[in-house]
Image (cartoon, rainbow, N blue to C red; front, top):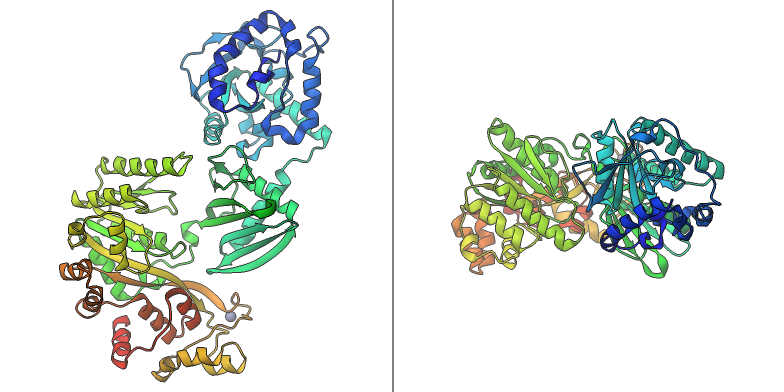
Length: 632
Ligand SMILES: [Zn+2]
């Protein structure tokens, strides 16, 4: 009665499983007729239940007994006669109920839910976790590397059922059969499993998962943007990035840290079904499935192998919009009114491409969100804003956000991203946001959108705003497009710098006296002090109102609304002229100058600004006066 536990059904790639399926089914039917065949069944432990080897072994032992010696199956009463099975091919459920099996003592097509003793994923595996209430509707069982979904016949369309199917699909876990049963059968399966787990006192991974969630909670409390867990041979170090700086959190034994990695992976939606410690793997946790701390919207996980069996896990925390570290308005975010003006000009153009650049973690997504939401407000909601993001980082009010789903390889991901942009273009947009111009295809589509009358917002990696043009040329955008100021309508570059704590930061003299800064560091910014700046240095000891002398972050940025002359200078190789033209004729200010203003005002530590945008070289008196005037 265990035809599915034959060697043929062991954990092979799903394609070969599929191709074997017809024969398997034939065997099942045969099996139903002559239960003697069961004697040959050779049980292979399910790949998901490696932790319960002893259990699988004992199960295999009893299954190997000739049918005549096997213990009589305890048949549950009431529900058997209504058992309906549906075969699943390629993950799609066939419309019709294929056959209604007569009540038989043996099983439904060889499978007997009442005597099932394998893993019940919807109970044990947090990835498929159902609440106690949801467990009335369905149970997902794992048998020899594939799934059997039991559905309460009255709840075929219950969301819990769809959730299990979707999760299994995302994890590439093949559900080979769906069986409609009565509520009793489902209850029995859960009760039996709960009892057997309780009896064995087996340690499930749930406590480890709780530890991982507690780690997330702690990170959220500290407003950390990332958690780094570096696992060496014997010991693991956990660090957290707070306000852009990596701070040591704690150490723990390597074995424990590995367990946390596995637990995190099992909680997540991953393109891989299995955790592979020697591979690079990526996964994602979302509120949809995991009970994340309230302020966290989703977590991106990256697992990297290291030498000597080590592992490096990085968890990037994406916060709910209400709890982002930057403020609501452009000015509160750290922009100056000249930047605000530039963004307004970009928003008012009917069409064109606006590009934001900056490294990962420079706040680009937040700026894009602010731009699009402001646009939505300004136009009173009378325009269609579509975004294509991989992944969407924040909810953007008034925009329809298209995610990129179910890609399992980089290549597939690129292709799906491209298809999503094409889809959006055909969906009557006014404004489009393309998460990133990541390759030639997405870049060319962004320009195509602009040339067909759409306002486009997107991001790109480059060092400063004008260098965006070089990157676009690298991505094969033709020069005639890059010299068209109606097409290239906005170039922005930005970074996040930390704000010194107003309560414990100190001036140059005191910092020097306390040995917090070096003599030459003070000399570097002496010209600013001389010009009347109130330069402040962070106190590394901090105070009870800050973390290590810093409190929050602000944007420093440069915005360019190019005109034909600027683009022509730049594209024809006269970069210095282009730069000077931007500064003088167009009233531009560089990101470094914006940083200098923050140092001058005592908002940012000069060392932090230099780390983000380079040396603070003295400006002429007239230029300093000019940027101070521009910033007011
Ligand atoms: Zn402080």
